[in-house]
Length: 86
Image 1 (cartoon, rainbow, N blue to C red):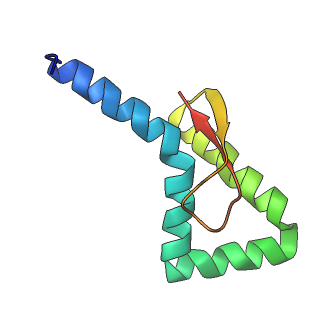
Image 2 (image 1 turned 90 degrees about the vertical axis):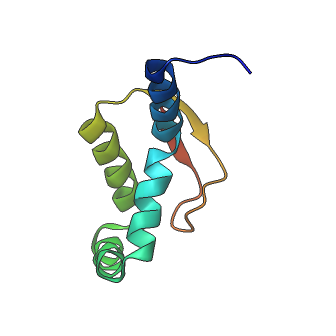
């Protein structure tokens, strides 16, 4: 196994997290009763696509991320796919 410095380990972990961060945010919504209720009300008022796109854009903006590729097998059941970021 090759040696990695602490900086390289941190960079690798952050890169992997950036790829999954949108899915993690949706999992947080899904697993929090209050957030899930608010999410469902927003979907009723604004529509599923708009709410999900808004959440995705908010994640990208909050962390200053760049699009990488679309991932089609998220863990969250609230979305069918999500953008992976770098």
